[in-house]
Image (tube, rainbow, N blue to C red):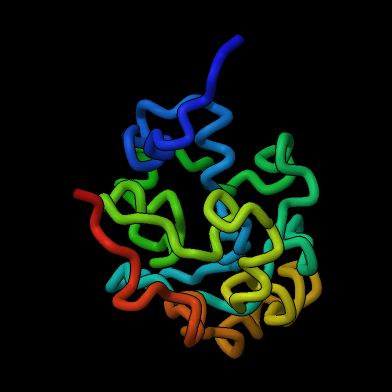
Length: 169
């Protein structure tokens, strides 16, 4: 019989992104759907702007991909997150668990690994549920600029720990 050490620190506090198992890596995703919003990049400055337009595979209610295992076959420019990619790209939302762990910070209270409930991200208002204007297939490309938004780069009031996520020691 194996006893589980309930006092042991959770894996995201003791492992780097590179050290995580595939199961740990996948479980780290908070399911907000913010990374599945269409982003626009300025050709000159390379600045990234979020839109409230969802990827064609984004389920706007669950905030999950409709075909996660085959997403890159349907959406060739879908970015597959890896530890290196997380460290390199600058457009992950500041609430993203991958980004937080890479920066040595803790997860927010609403993350399912802390709350034990995948619905707390929606209750906290962090997910894209109810905020997506439509799919990239439904909104004409010419209208994308009209859908630029700033909210994916912010946390709703009450969603952060007092003082925000803390650096791990």
